[in-house]
Structure formats: structure tokens, C-alpha cells
Image (cartoon, rainbow, N blue to C red; front, side, top):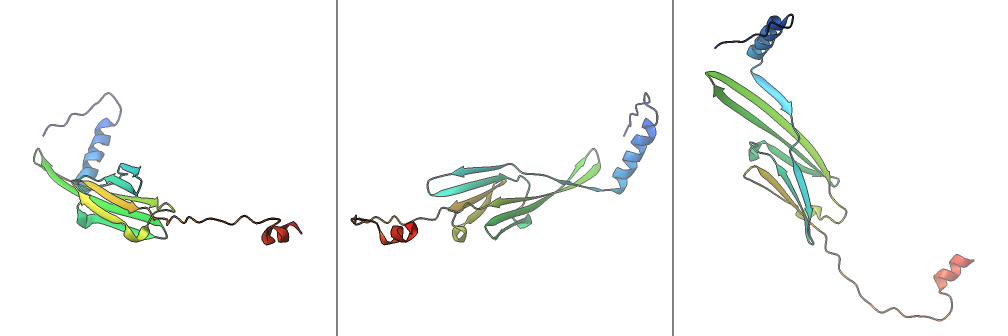
Length: 147
């Protein structure tokens, strides 16, 4: 494998040599990443979709604590290129607050084709309709407030 060193800058040879030496003794490269997330609000639910290509279901952790949805994951990759084996490791952590009208007891989480789908149903308010009597004079409650 040929190496090309740029000698126009001083110490380039040594910088490149140090970088190659570090790479040889650091076989795994680690990075943090922030997957793309999309939220859509529908009439009956919220849909949170997170793009996490290369992350297996076994490397995902989804928790709900005090209306905060925490999502953590990691992906590991290993491949060979020109006879050299490369390994990499990446992790992410994101948090989302569940809306007040979200039903935390019925959240559904699924993982398909590199996308984590989270469906948060909305709580269904029972519509109460009744006729109210109109009285003459001040109400007793309003009378107490006006004193």
C-alpha cells in the first residue's frame, strides 16, 4: 500500500505517521450521532419516526419516565477494504416529551427497515353536553366573590 506525504508543509510526514500509528492502535472508532426524527400529528394519534439505519432491535432501548420518552441505541460496523479491517461504533440518545393529550399507557413501538416508529394515541375526551339553567339575579358563587 503506497502512502503519499505532502512535503510542502513542515512536519507533514510526522503528522501523517502519528495519525497512522494512532489508527493502528485504535481499532474501533466511536462517534455520537443524532438520527433524523419526524413527528406527525394526526386526529387520533402522534407518529414519531426516527431513521436509525444499521441499528438492530437488540441494540435499542426505549423507556418512558414522567412523560419523557428516552430512546438510546448503538450500531457497530466492521468491514474490510483493500485488505484492512475497519471497525466503527456509534451511539445516540434522544428524549421527547409526551404531549399532555398523549396516552402514555398505550404507546406502541416498532422497528422496520431501519426506522423506529412510535405511535402515541391521543386521550379521548368524553364530550359532555347538557343544558344549563339560566337563573335570575346573581349566582350564589358570584355573590360571594363580589363581597
